[in-house]
Image (cartoon, rainbow, N blue to C red; front, top):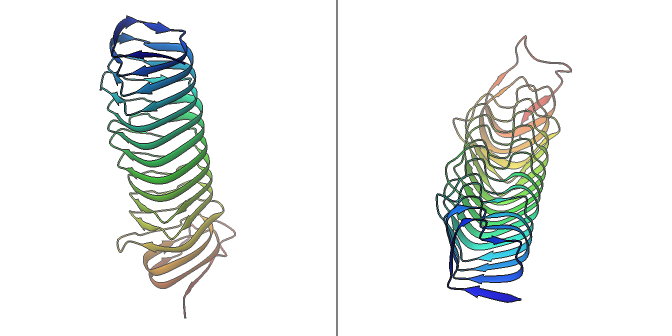
Length: 281
């Protein structure tokens, strides 16, 4: 593998179609498509300023790099990529990719990031601001995520999450086959229209969580004191630790909690309307 070190590149496609190359302390300045149609690329201690710096790259390892705010839409159509110990300040990263892994990465503008990814692994990742990260992704594994971005994990499937803190609203909408362990989920309208969502040892807050859900499973979760009107029109099996403020019109299944403030069953409940609700003896 050849090495390019301590160089500055700018303009249009300065490193087009390079292969089997290590970039060490390289700066990609303002311009477009700095590294494009490439393969087997290693980036160490690099600085990216221009737009679209890594498109159509097959096989890459990126460590200790910085992506400036101008590096928008930086990494698309690039498969088999690992990124570690990096800071990203540009929006719209990571689109239409396969086999992407991130470790110890902070993304300070998570707007429209992680779209259409198949095979995504995150370890100790932080997302700040922005909307709709993780849209239409498949096969995601997470261990350590802090996110205050809005509308996370929508229209995605086959997800396993451990040790996350997610502060948002409208998270996990229209997802399929998702399990979340040992995490804190804060925000309104969690998990609406989800299918096969399983929450294990999580803490949940926000108004009207987990409505219109099919195949919902809750194991040993706690609910915030103001978390109300839960489970409307949902099919579920729920074992809740402690108190839940109110439950409204669950469709079917079984709910047990240590304490329930209010159960609302009205004329709008949907059939089969046979959910069993009980307080633990």
